[in-house]
Image 1: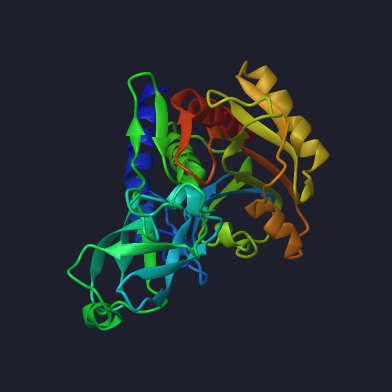
Image 2: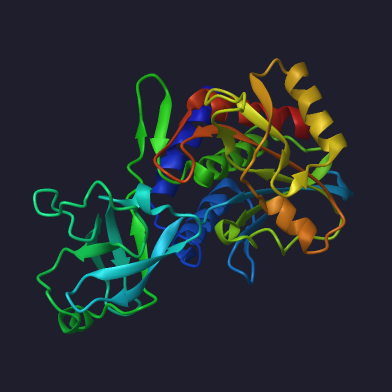
Length: 343
């Protein structure tokens, strides 16, 4: 077990180090393709840009489709201001409060990458008497480019333009006590867990009873990541995404969360029941919760018209869409739930 957890944590660090906000995911999917080939699989890039992997298994007419997303929150240049600063528009649910004072990278289409910092407009507290009273939004915040620029013309000369992607530092840290702290644990922690499960199948020469697929989606944060690419014979979609931690919910970072309902409605009753029964049988530390503000790739599949059962599990993650925190035990419990549920 320890070797698989080491592998999962190594993959987590590798994945979070790759910038991949929605719409800018080629580098991370190329990485996944390479890693799965090294494990002995034959991954395929979907037309939409995701990665589909057939893990094998006996029953192709009752196949299960696991999904995790490797697109993250980020931003895009909306305007080059006359003073040489950049106004951004968010990609996905990035909150301006959580982006303030963060280092970032501006990936231009044709002229390389530049560094910068997201700040409140007029961010010097010794100068701006309204600093504390200003409600943070992308309309009152800007990126300062780490180049000697003071005008729109200066910035345009660098090759920066509207539509360029802006990525924020993940600041990935694994503490001695096992806490995982990083941006984009949603959902790169779950992606790393799926990679660990794929490695386990190969290492232990396990042939699952059902044919299993893994799909790494690249548009989950904008709502349509899981709306395509499900093969024939799939009867069940299991989204492996972050488990919510917060007031009114029982899940903690050390646990695997099983979602019974989110903002899109209830998950399949029988699937949820089977997941709970598996967690109990395997003596796992788990929680069952209802997520108030959440949607998943599994729901995107149903909205696209697929006739499948659906479920959602994931390691508990606190401070979602900000600087998030989980724990190695939450990842372990999620891995073991997959292992026990999929057979």
